[in-house]
Amino acid sequence: MLGFFKKTQQAVRRTRDSWFGKVTRLFEREAIGESLWEELEELLISADVGAETTDKLVSSVKERAQKDKLHDAAAVQEALKEEMVCILSIPKQVTEQAGGIRIIMVVGVNGSGKTTSIAKLAKFHKSQGKKVLLVAADTFRAAAVEQLQIWAERDGVDIISSKPGSDPGAVVFDALQAAASRKADIIIIDTAGRLHTKFNLMEELKKIKRIAARESKAPLEVLLVLDATTGQNGLAQAKHFTDAVEVSGIFLSKLDGTAKGGVVLAICDQLKLPLSYIGTGEGPDDMVPFNPVEFVEALFASDARAESPALEST
Image: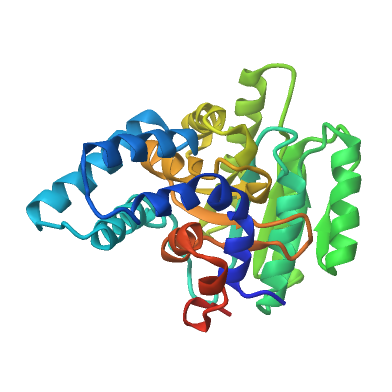
């Protein structure tokens, strides 16, 4: 099984080969001049970092280079990497209780990879020795319930579901009542990604969150699944969900499917939300908890450096 760093490198391979490989080559030149900063800006924007975040990042690196008198290109590149890590290092908004139940309410639009991401989460936490309970609260689509049931069987985890069209809040209520008797450590709630109007969707999500908060004293995380291939459009989605249910973390799916993984920087900078997990491929094991240092190292790593055991996580 691949370790976390190698999976992260796998996820950003297209981004690295398309854009950050060019960034690395910028710093192979001897002189640090204005043309370097202009080219760096162009490359970062092309990698979907976004104009505002790019300006902030490049300005910070230029200030450090001037203040610390960095004339060596390698030193400037290290400063760039450190500033990127700083942007990506958003503190967790929900504190986990040692030995307590953990509730993860997963939201996101249909097509974002939400159900598959839930399946990956379930398998990951089971591999960590946790008892996982899935909750099929996307009752508006029969296919969503069936898909989650299939994943639950494959992952070997319990699931609470009901008939299509059932009240999602009632499903969540029943699941939380059953969690104690099933000795669940982690409860993962799937939710609808599209109702007839945006208002209906958000009101439904608010209701589910209220029930979950009322029926359990466990910390409640709201995890938003964003499709990395949608790029900057994902930021608007995130703002709508955050306004409605106070998203506490991001699961960035399909990161391996885009050459513009720089959107990760835009998400952290613009939304001030921590990235919790990233999808690294299509397989059930292809996800890792997000690590800012490893992510940046993976973006800049050569194939030889990717084999280095120094960066390998378990």
